[in-house]
Amino acid sequence: MYKNLFLVTIIALSTIKNTAQQNIDIVRLDSDSLSYLFHITQNKTHTVQQDHYYWFKSGRIHKTQGSYYGKLLHGNYKVFNSEGALLEEGRHNKGKKTGLWRTWYENGNIQSTRQKRFPAIRNAYNIREYDSTGKVVKKGFENRNGFSGYRIIEEKNNLMKIRYRKGEVILPRNKKASKN
Image (cartoon, rainbow, N blue to C red; front, side, top):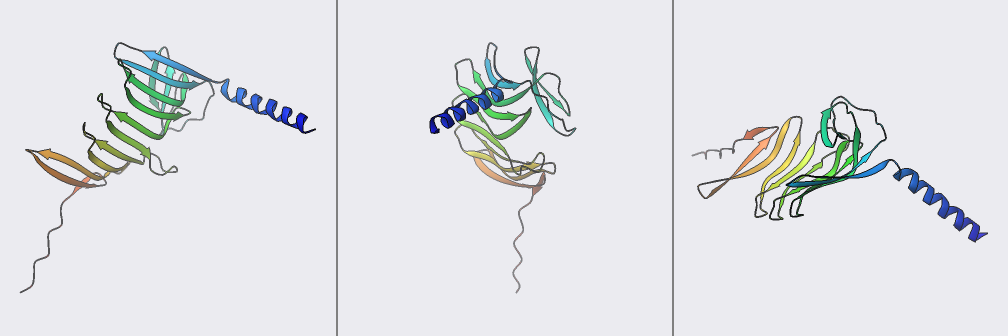
């Protein structure tokens, strides 16, 4: 009896796996300087006017707001340069970017990270940007109100840390004058 139950379980699991995978294809696009490796699905999805969708048609990746015409990107997405170095990595879910997205400089150091801040809020992301040596030069979050966080700018060998709130520069607070 246990042998039959085990056999039925294995058959059921393999059927579920095959059914889920039959609508997902892997695509590789190569140009002189870049290679793209990504997954696409033939499954349809309900679109939302405010959202951007990434889709594949006629040998190209397209991006449109509110709709699509082709096969949606769905799953892992990677971009490599001609030497095989990883330049960008992330995931799509039914045409929309999801989870952590990272980019790298050609030297292999991290260039930026971007991740959805709150799943229920559209267009709210935690972001970090790095210089080519790996030092953080921008950190905070972006949403429809703009960037909040800080940016480090180097001017004539001096580092300046500029703070932002809702896309506006926050000026340093003046110290209170002492009473005499």
